[in-house]
Length: 169
Ligand SMILES: O=P(O)(O)OP(=O)(O)OP(=O)(O)OC[C@H]1O[C@@H](n2cnc3c(O)ncnc32)[C@H](O)[C@@H]1O
Ligand SMILES: [Mg+2]
Image (cartoon, rainbow, N blue to C red; front, top):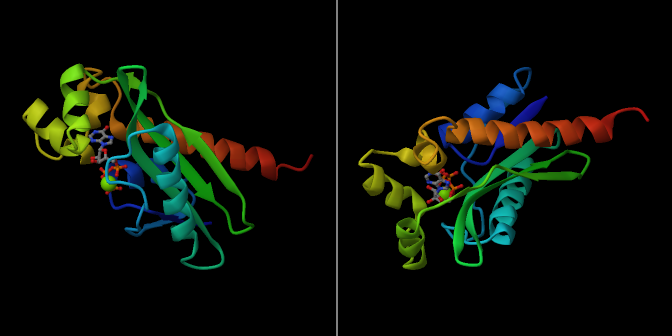
């Protein structure tokens, strides 16, 4: 099985390698065709699907996986959200979302001002490359859940659905 992941972010590639240990996992940077900082479930999900479809074009037998991070609002409350999509050579698309946690008002205000969560988190946590490491989810869960762990769960949900629909019934 050949998989292409639409990102070079190690939390995303690492999650796919963990959940598909038997696969040959490659990655390529592809456009998400949504804003650099998606601000809704719809937009974040679209980014994941666009990345998966773009990767799938690599060759006829390749599975494309797109993972996209964003935020979404329920009323005034801002949540971290993440979506994944898997595009198969047969033309199916599986989607799944990840765990959500509330982001503090201080962070959501900066997002509304047009900043990207990646850069906001680095200055908030006084760390570098949070997006490639523990992620906002790691910072705000006291490092109990890392960004890679959260994406692993999303990829597991994709794999599970793909397996279910491919079973002999
Ligand atoms: O190279 P790509 O694959 O684009 O990886 P990325 O880190 O930019 O991640 P996304 O595009 O999926 O996420 C959109 C934005 O939200 C940021 N982001 C999303 N989730 C995050 C998290 O848990 N921690 C830090 N930044 C996060 C991210 O850095 C971007 O600025
Ligand atoms: Mg990005």
